[in-house]
Structures are given as C-alpha cells and as structure tokens.
Image (cartoon, rainbow over all chains, first blue to last red; front, side, top):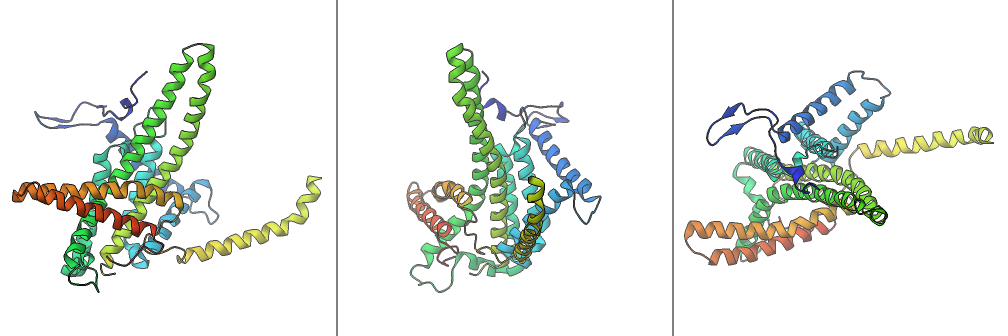
Length: 250
Length: 106
C-alpha cells in the first residue's frame, strides 16, 4: 500500500525550463492543477454565458448562481461599497473551490493542500487590505488597532492584542484551508487503504472491509462539503477583512 | 390515479413558485445576515473556531520570539507575548461566538 502522504508529493511533469544550482522552474503536478483550475473556470464562465438565454440552461445557471452567491456574500458583509472587490473575491472563491473539487478526482493533485499555496493567497488578501486601508484612510487606518472610548490605562494592552489579532489573520486563513484539505485527503487515503489491506486477508477480511468502505464513502461525501465550505469561509473572511480596510473605525 | 392528482395540484405549485421567487427577491436586497462576520451556519462557524485559538497563541509566541532575537532580551518577550497570544485567542473566539460580532472593541 502506498503511503497516505504520497498524494501530496510534488512531481515535475515537464523538464524544468530554467535550471541553475539553486533554482528550478518547470511544470509540476501542482502547477498543472492550478492551470487546469484557472482554465476550467474561464471556460465555464465564457462558454456558459455565450448563449445569454433569458431562461438559463444548466451551465448558465451554474455561472449565474455562483455570481449571485459571491455578490450577495460581499453585499452582506462589506455593503454595496464592497462590490468593487467583486472581481477579486469571485476569482479567489472560484479558484479555491475548483482547486478543492479537482482534488476530489481520483489521482488528481489537490494544490490547496500545500500551505505555501494557501499562504500566498492569504498574504495577497492581507496585503491588499493594508494597501487599500492606508490608501483610503492614510494613518487613520491605524484606528483599526485602537478602539475608541477605551480607558487610557488599558490602551497599550489592547493595541498589542489587536495587532496580534491582525497578524493572526493571514496565518489562520491559510492554515485552516491547508489543514482541512490535507487532513481530509489523508483520512480518505488511510480508510481506503484499510479496504485493500483487509480484503487481502480472505473471506473474513472482505467482510471486515465493509466498515472502512462505508467510512470511505461517508468521508468522500464530507470532503465535497468541506471543499465548498472552505472556499466559502476563505471568501467570506476576505470580504470581512476588506470591509475593515473600507471602515477601520468601529 | 396519478394523472387526476396532478391537475388540481398545479395552482399550488405555481403559488409555491411565487413564494420562492418573492423570497429570492427579498434575499437579493442583501439584508439577511449580520454584517460583522457572525457565523452564517453553525458548521461553518465551528470549523473556524478550531484554528482560531491555536493560531493566535502561535503567532503571539512567534512575535515574542522574533522580538527577543532582535532586541536580545530572550526569553522575556517570548513569555509576555505568549500570554498576549492567549488573550488574543480568547478575544478572537469571543468575537466569533457572540452574535453580532461580539463586543465592539476593535
């Protein structure tokens, strides 16, 4: 039985384009999965909306529903002013969602199970919050760390806590997504591994393998829920953080 | 049997569709949810809480360690910021679990 962690190994698909002693740039399975995700999102959006039917068909419904879903999420958390971030949040949501779903295909690679990928996404979010916040409010953005109407005695402690809380955001954002995908897929592989190793033991083993098989089935269903839920949480937290950039003082 | 059942049910279906359209229309105005990141569904909130506390403690400790390296005050800032990290974790969870986004101390 292959190791349950084998599925997360990064393997080159093409020979590296650029190769020096310290640097290797080439097409890996992770990069290929990301390209596949981007291409399928683009294809889905362009092809499904090419008909522009008044009564949408199935594909057009998918595109319209996902648009409406993200648009409502932004309006509810960041208000109508947040709608200018629609392209950013929609791209993030679809990239993570399709990335998670591509990982559900057998033998496919889940690029969201690598913390460097999720941290890059989270760092992009937090850096844009910082840039937008300082660009819109100047130094007034620092009010985010100093709530109004607080006793002067408490202020230093609260400011430290608020700054640590802000620094927590990119870490928790990336760790949550990465840990969920990593743990889910590892669990799936371990349970599926029990099925094959038990059924090799003969009749009693095959009967015993029914339990992990049922478990594998249940975890697969759970993983589809997690794939959607984690993309949703990542996107809605992005909206909440962007709202902080628009309105730092609470 | 089923054919005669279908006919009278049709107006009900249309009415139900009208209801759903109305509800969808209201949802579109976007006033359904708490604006401050209160958990939308129980499960989504529960999944968030798990990492929130642990990450806050780790980040607090990490900041303290980095400051110690920079200022050469090991191990004191690590200890202090570790405690601040715990406080941050508690604050994060209180904010996450209180409806309406928790006490407005940000």
